Image 1: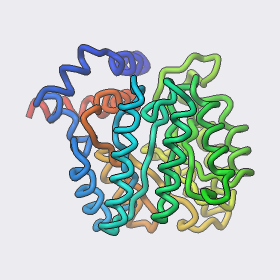
Image 2 (image 1 turned 90 degrees about the vertical axis):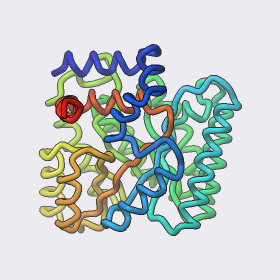
Image 3 (image 1 turned 90 degrees about the horizontal axis):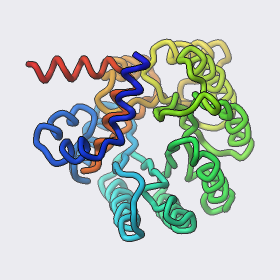
Image 4 (image 1 turned 180 degrees about the vertical axis):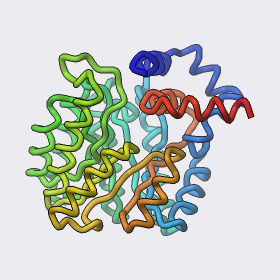
Length: 307
């Protein structure tokens, strides 16, 4: 399985395969399990349907590593449209943003300006922006940007961040974020990282995830635990129960199309469940990382294709 994961992550950066998949009917059909559609309207309809079932939603316009300021501004405009439509249609959803899609690798100042504009819009519409975490080379700059914006009184509480449990530094980062009052989405991590910065073994990442989840649950802030791993979920539930932490003080977060049975079960048990709904034409890297995270998804897709 580690070899399959590494192969899938490597393929996520293959430009030829990406072009074929993103521009073919076969590829779009393949992605439909995990990607809500290509357009904003697809995502909004999906969010409304999930709300009707009792789920909270995060919307993610797929794309990363833009090559021009014009691309970054176009990506930002999609998020501004989302925030407008979420309010107009009374959808219970927030947004998740990658900084490389906002031009971080071109000009950190550009990414800061765009992220500030989105946070301002979210604040004005009583919404929330989650800044996603990418590869470890961008961890510090992402943390710095979020802490800088959150420190502005008018944005306090309207911007959060993602922390990856497989990084050694995450314990210290989470403690600082809690001290700063910044809400966290905790995930395991989906990028190929060297053993110098990340736990190479799944067992060690799992152990760290459980420890970090406990730190978040104990804090007074409302955090998100993003996982489809039932062992991690049960560990969080047990810790919360043993420490008198009410289910309304946190939420489980799960990906669109992954473990829908578990999503529904958690909802029935009285937990808040937020479904992460990605959409857009640049879906291939996201799709391949989802396969890498959970190789069982490969078997699921293969069975359905043969059908």
